[in-house]
Image (cartoon, rainbow, N blue to C red; front, top):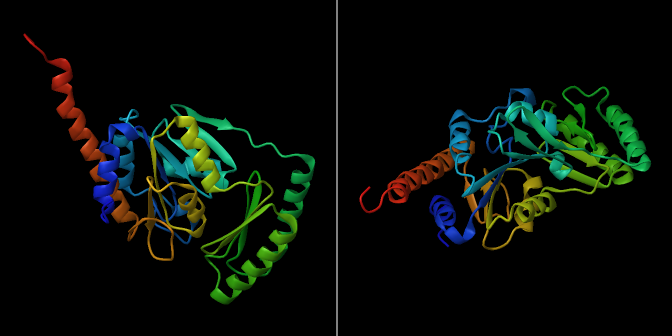
Length: 275
């Protein structure tokens, strides 16, 4: 394999034996630059254009977003093309984007899980109370403490308290960039991605992400898949790209290559003797 992620990506998708390739991308910090206000996050225009172009080649590429965001927020903010699979809450939620909405898998909690989720919400609200810039998000199967807007010392203290709550009440606790998420379900991006690959019959997976929670997905994939770390930090990913803008350029190049291949193939498919 080459050390150039662009060359490796183009070679992988060009290989007929690997089709379709599952292109699984994180949202925040990967397709969308990180924002202090999560509501301000949007896919970069160049990346959005590339995803729409890639969606026109479902025989070669299948699209998925694999995010820690709740599914409803991911769908509202990401603006991805129909046919894209959305995996939210680090694998606990899943849906497919349709022409008129989401074809959603329902998250079902038993009585114990529902009770723990309620207690998590109460205790995490207590963690945030009185701390400026710390706020709590409730998902269908998890509670999240966000500290991006807090002073570093305040945020660090809140994160440590949230981790202690998670150790008592959660099934899975994830500590990402300025965020602690505690789920009452056992789910992670890696397991969700492997399940999706098997369902689609994908010949290979391309996975890109920026956060420590994306490392679960990188570790779950095989040596013939393509893993791509966006930004700085330790990683088990095979490749690295500096920022979402650079990833958008890679996606643009991939979409252009598929478009060129399709235009070259069309005359051969339609032509012939006497045509």
